[in-house]
Length: 321
Image 1 (cartoon, rainbow, N blue to C red):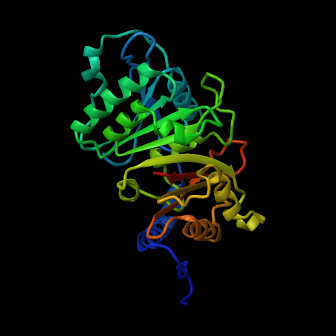
Image 2: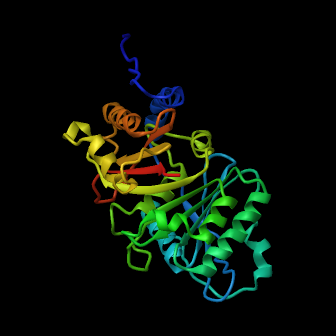
């Protein structure tokens, strides 16, 4: 093998290997420019009905693509607030009031073919679920690049039961992918849990630069298969620290009941000095061992904020159905 060449792990699809080659070519440029996180700002908070609040976060990016995160309901807005608190300058979530559903066009401002749209909502509020389906259909009509939903549910709630909910089935039909994430954080906007799966999922779709990136094309290709996804998180220090990537992945897949996911997206977040190709390879190989035959695998990394006093962790999105 030539000096500096990147070894190709076995059992990985060509897309994963190509992605890694491309992103490692970007490492020098990122190190010279200094890895950073795009600033965040919030648009006006726009409710869709009595007791139903909708807010949006739009992280600015260096590309024409706009990232629109919509939090529906107090718990979802709290998750968006925790993400903004962790990611950079905090937007203020205030000014909520009841608006007529006829104001839906105001919510859709900025949604077009250059938008990545992510709806965040709780699983246990019927009015929120109905509003989310209505909003998702409108986003779908406008031809957004990605039209996704992240549904927050109590820890321990069987995902199989959620998958059978009629309203969630309707929302799933109106989006390109629907993700389920456990959330037991107290209502509020202070980020305290280093293994906060909703926050990590929002961070994945913010597409902040890291040493081993994924881009919008990577996400669209893997999520393009649609389906129902489980968002789970586990502590993982890295292979240099003696941690086992397969054990971390198995921890995230524990509630699949022994089934093999049809696709996997893994994001490992750690400090700048801890990101390594050895750990990337370990995660990628472990995913290849657990995904179903011919399944899609996407592996990426993320940088913990410099000021964050949090251990490295692994986010896993697994397509369960």
